Image: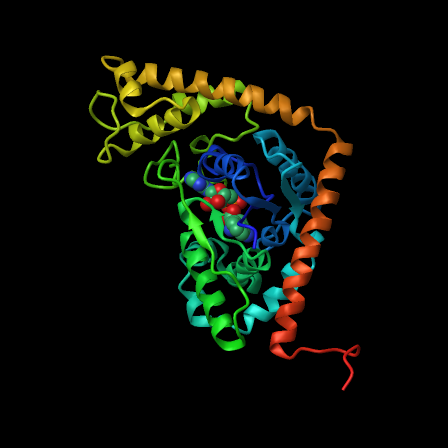
Length: 331
Ligand code: TYM
């Protein structure tokens, strides 16, 4: 069987540096080693209320972002989750395998449902099961994600193991690929919280489509630690977070970075980081603009066909293993 990776991102709000450094960046390198599937998970997005017009726009924008970060549609499959109905179908099957008690333990559900108050949907509760379906349909070996998805990956593995035990060997049990550096990029305004599009303070989060002024302003306002020296140090999370972003965008080793900032102040670090980010995102945004509707349609159309084929085979095997038959099966 081909060694496969699968990953995805939600087309909600805007894609930020945390998404890029924790996940998308690694997809680009891993696509050369694995048969790769990168999904725009629009069915996950509707677990919290979305504006329909905006959701449609953001779905296509995210596909452009996948292409512009360097995912090559000649070697990787890029597709929209709702284009492959097997994702929702397998979710129903896995709902009958998952236990309510294990879904209740999901920390992301607990956090998000607190924010939603009375209006928490059953879909938000079921979110991790849809994610497990995404992954298991493709017999995925590796799932490159940020650290916040680790618990969902553990659930996916548990569901695969349980299904295989109850109905016979069906799913490959996937591993999470969580990078050593960048797995949890923190908010610029509160280094105790992860960078997130739902951050109450918009200055905490640098978006990939931010303009240069916004980027510079956000880094200028970034919270720092007490003290003055600039080095990687877990006890100084704000500076370490800024240095980590700098490290990932420049590709420089940590000792070179520390030597570069030796004797310099926080203002210089913020200025240099803003410069590096502005230049990186300028080139990226140019690529986004260069992707036309035709290229996008072709990529997503090809992706849909390839994904449907594999997902269809897996789902047919699942139905057969469970004794789910329809009118076409003779006695
Ligand atoms: P989403 O859209 O919230 O995030 C996309 C990816 O970005 C990572 N990420 C971060 N990494 C580092 N630092 C941060 N501050 C940060 N914030 C987000 C996330 O870990 C993720 O890898 N549930 C997924 C989408 C999904 C999926 C899947 C992923 C649906 N089905 C199947 C993998 C496999 C999510 O929340 O994406």
